[in-house]
Image 1 (tube, helix red, strand yellow):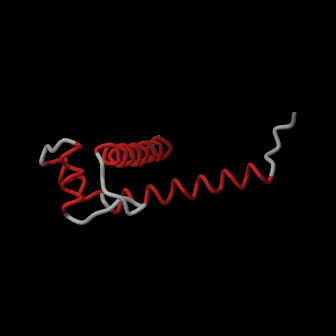
Image 2 (cartoon, one colour):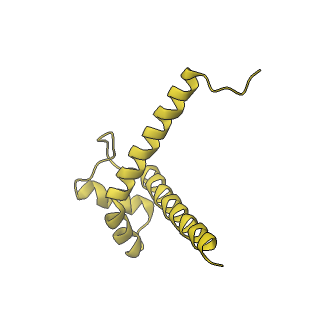
Length: 96
């Protein structure tokens, strides 16, 4: 078995990368609202209710649930961690 990537697998990898990029972009578009709600120390249930009351919808235009709030919060945390790790790696390579 070769380790060559078939065109079909490359296509699926590219489509997955596009989905991830879209999800990241959506999460970042709500970052200010999510951070505001977190600062108010609301539970995910309360955050979902508040987002629904403010007229925000999920990417598929559904109402927010506690799980969808948790997922967006986890995505924002991952994006932040990746950005910090990237910045630290860049600092490590430039410092002597």
